[in-house]
Amino acid sequence: MLDPLYYTSLMKKILIRTISIKLDVDGHEAALQETQERFNAAASWIASVCWDENITNTNTAHHRVYGETRSRFELGAQLAVCARAKAVEAIKAMKAKKSQTCPRFGPHGSIRFDARTYRLMSLDRVSLNTMQGRVICRMILGKRQHEMLVDPAWEVGGADLVWRRGIYYLNVTQSKEAPEQIESTDTLGVDLGVVRLATDSEGESFSGAKVHEVRMRYHKRRQVLQQVSTRSAKRRLKKLSGREKRFQKDTNHRIAKSLVQKAVRTRKAIALEDLRGIRERVTVRRANRYERHCWAFSQLRGFISYKAAWAGVEIKLIDPRNTSRTCSQCGHCEKANRQSQASFLCKQCGFCLNADINAAINISQAQVKVPLVSRLRA
Image 1 (cartoon, rainbow, N blue to C red):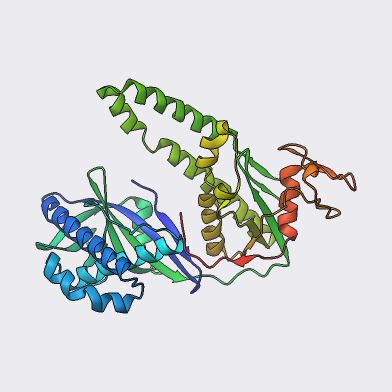
Image 2 (cartoon, helix red, strand yellow):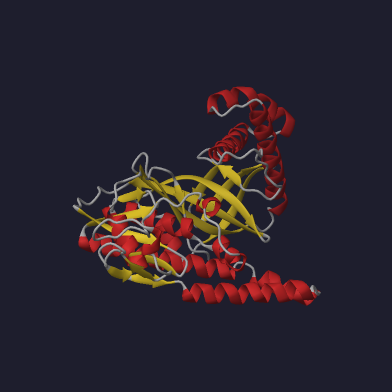
């Protein structure tokens, strides 16, 4: 059983969560596979048309491709609409990243369902619209998933059918209004890093030593198995796949939960550095490139953000420039203040403190750079 994935949409003050449910599709594999292939072929074609004609408006895209999508790929009306929605959203995401590559979807890509193309039924059954008509599959629910699915406080929305390693999962979305934000007069600054994954302005830190140890162990093991390149080695590589990622994800969840609970307990907002683009701005030694590439700061920030939204804690983003070089006591900023990764000594007033704690204090005192209004996925 997979843990549910959550994400938050803050622009409309709506909380959205996704429950990942394993499906028993016995007897319906052919229908789902055919629908999956047609749906994603249609989404790829729509994306190429809209990309070439620079269409990002949903209504304009609908009028341009709807009729041809139905005739070319023989999709039903609602599946054609869902394919268009998937393609347009992907284009918007690529353009937001300033990417020059048109999005494409493989034959095993997800299928998007709306209220007209799927229906949750009693006895843990779900009805799905396919190229061969409606099929009914059994949902394999754990206790936690069942409790979430029947929770009356959450309204059921659309769903995505996802294929992973020969198993189908239905990712059902639910939504409800976000709680009112806690009134706060103070801010808890959080400095994100590699050696210390997170350090707050009250002095608590979360070491990255265990993550580093696990990452290096799996990295070396993968290198050895890839060099061997036998059948058994490839089977072992497949078995190891995802373990490092899951360990990092669990660690980030624990850190985020602890920080948000502290913010709720002390009635403080949380301030984070806006680290977008840091990999392009900052260079590191060759020996440290792999670890920098694997640094999951964006995931941790996303986890903190959605957990804070659920708890009614305000999130602030601040400019990260010079937070590690500025004295939190006198405000003097100089590169030489940061003596080492762990040590900070102000050249003007002589103030000495752990460098990460000093940076976290500066973050807590900084002015807000940008509001956090983007959708963040865990």
